[in-house]
Amino acid sequence: MKRNDPLPVGEIIRLAFEKAGQLDTIERQQVCSMWPQVVGPTINRMTVRRWVDGDTLHVVISNPALRNDLSFMQDKLIEALNKTAGKQIISHIKFH
Image (tube, rainbow, N blue to C red):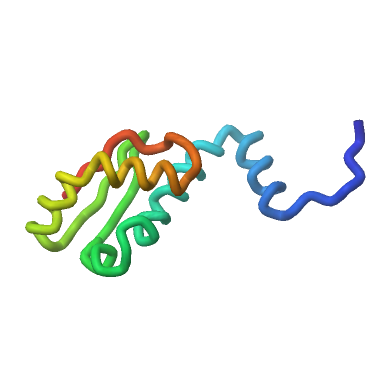
């Protein structure tokens, strides 16, 4: 069946990534970009780098005391990130 109504650009991009089998990669990167929104500006200022490897979010924190505190909050951060994403994407956070 031919589709006559136009699709939003975001939907076209999502369909292209889904067809290429890269939708999960894009979703993981979106979770990575949600870090500042979830933790707020203060913690984000001390975040040096972040990346996703599989279902693990790696976060480099410049302050050792904050790194330790965040490790105790890991479950809540995972829950908040996945809630913001709308689905279960991250299972672990590793602080460096």
